[in-house]
Image 1 (cartoon, rainbow, N blue to C red):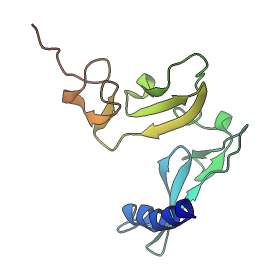
Image 2 (image 1 turned 90 degrees about the horizontal axis):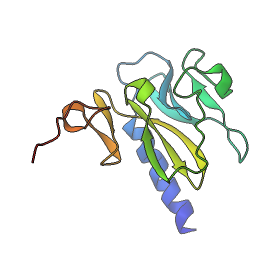
Image 3 (image 1 turned 90 degrees about the vertical axis):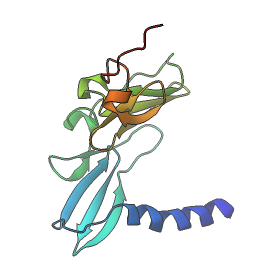
Length: 144
């Protein structure tokens, strides 16, 4: 019961984080598995369908959830996490502006860093490029 209450409290807060001020009506990508629908200035978050064996992802070309094979990188790429240590890993092909998560040998999906940030493997979060070591950032290692 407590978890249901927590979810009910967090959903309105999550929608408030994404507003439609200054946006025309339409769909806006939040991440690979969800998008924001703006309709008359009112925001609504839509999650793409998924189950244990299949997950649809957001296709920003069509504005709909789609089969990953029809979607561009990074959302259309399913990483092999078998034998990979649990954690978050940068999508270097995207200049580290996104990252993916592996847990218990399963690929959990891609996430995007906020604008102007890159994924920092050492911190496990997104950070300013000048604060992140190569290959994702431009921080120069301190010399002893």
